[in-house]
Image (cartoon, rainbow, N blue to C red; front, top):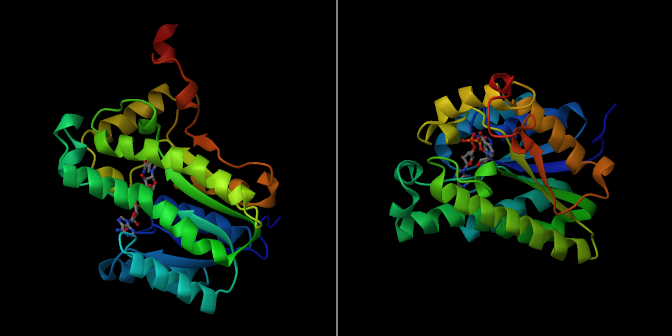
Length: 264
Ligand code: NAD
């Protein structure tokens, strides 16, 4: 069974082998997709290149998503070397560490701007620049978190950014669904996973260990769980699905906020 056979995907957001984007890349590769990767800066190249090569990918290009010229350059190279694309994955977020602890209202104007620019605007910018490369029926995917719709301790400005990202998914789905290429746009809202990005959030260790006690499946989420759901959302199996925020969180978002085992 190769659900993504013949499809080409460009993936933003692999930093190391703990990254959610890496879980997605592995699942896409298993299902027959051809992959291209983009990484944030030179420091990451020595980690990302061997990972990409282990999945048979030779397209490994830098792109700081806060720079329009970097986005234009990576799309130009993708067009030259990969040709048309079927899938775009945006698994990128950033906020200053100081803004991911303590109260939300202490966030500075600059801290707010940086979080919104890198974590929200970049998806819209990538979607726009990738659109001319997308094959009809293609799919775009981003990653969000329940902090968009609930006040999660210390998630702060990133929760505000994720709310804006989820709204972007709906507006992009409207625009690109009406576009002649009929491109679909969805998000996965993942349960907490220990990655580089999460290490910067105060209290994340306790939150992850608590999660396994209250999620309906009584376990944590893995990057493999997210990768498998991404295969579905980016494949023709989900041809009728767009504008969705799809929770991959072991049922946490529908759970009553009380440890079920203690409820008797
Ligand atoms: P990660 O640190 O592995 O990935 C974040 C990526 O963002 C890194 O590859 C980093 O290089 C990239 N990035 C940051 N600034 C960038 C820039 N200016 N230009 C280009 N790339 C940049 O952590 P992750 O947890 O895999 O995060 C991936 C996505 O998943 C993020 O959007 C995150 O908010 C989301 N998410 C994570 C969790 C979790 O618990 N880990 C849960 C829900 C959603």
